[in-house]
Image 1 (cartoon, one colour):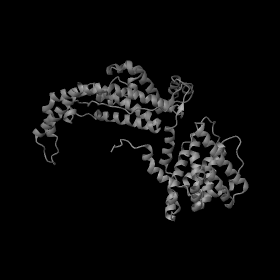
Image 2 (cartoon, rainbow, N blue to C red; image 1 turned 60 degrees about the vertical axis):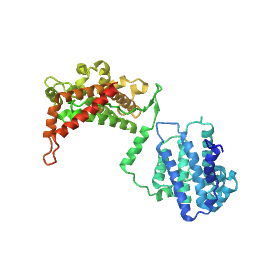
Image 3 (cartoon, helix red, strand yellow; image 1 turned 90 degrees about the horizontal axis):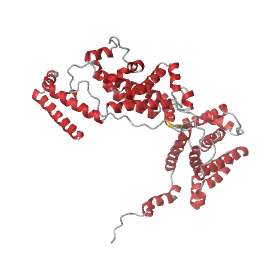
Image 4 (cartoon, rainbow, N blue to C red; image 1 turned 135 degrees about the horizontal axis):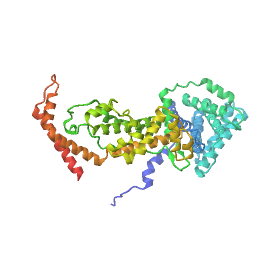
Length: 489
């Protein structure tokens, strides 16, 4: 017997085909099963509405993607209305012939029912026109997506019909979604100019509005929704670039301890208050990345600026005499400007020579400082300076700090400067250098390190023997040395 290595596509899909072809069980559903069926499909409808509502960006004029959502949404909506009206009748129709399963047949069954719901001829004609339009646009979208722009007036009709059918057939779509949807139609009618449709549902919509009981959205929900929209809205600028750009997370190989032997000993000889600043470098870098990804562009800019300032301060103090470093962080060093980003920019850029980064980072840090002053102090001179350095027409005219389309550009450039600094100071090469420094520093002072660790134990707790502490440090030293030698090769 020959054993088949692979199953055919037909064999693989047979079970799924049988499951979806056999609809006879739907006829025997009891009331509980029907309710569960409607609840599950209603969630699908609500998800469609969320996608339609909350991806409607005012700065993007072409909303043709909505027809890929409205098409299946309305087909499901109409079929659920038919099931709600007469479950058995529609299931029998559905099972009679494949041609009776499509949207066209469902529409034909809906109109006589609407007449019994006391809609007048003008209203029923409008329902027919809307559903026909949705179907045509859906087919155009699927078969020939090169269509024109959407018109706000058609969406008002789409939204109002959803609310009316939900009300007539008792589908019970979430009131908060319906409220947001009808508010959108009200916004269109109030604020848009141009031709609109004759009102035929006005009294019905008022009745729907009156009976809605929306849940008050929490402030954090509203903010999340707003920023999710910002983070997923891509705009093509006149140089062909799209913003916001995709960014990679910050990669930090290793930040050296202020006292290198800490790599092995876990203890400082003479801890200073500024030592822990290195912890902020990684935190600010990560939060800048996460903020940019979520559309929190001002937060991303601030975190990136803070990260760069921490890097410069930390690395400058780390290679300076400890007393001078203490004076710098307290802004008490004689003849020195305030120890902030300006300490390293403009007329003070010679300080970058000590860090050996002047040629590579002087221009970038000057740009960063201009952004900092423009953002933190809303300085008009710096805002104009940033405009002049813009590369596109929009950048040269829009406000780089407040304009919705230019802020992602500034945030991206600031993030890249931060990322470049992290890569320069904390890359694989510097990681090896830092580990080597740590190993050498430990060899010089391992005896005093053991004594210090032994003496610093908390008296109220059981004491570890000195030889145990020494053994722990030696094992750690051995392990890191092996890793260093392996990586170096």
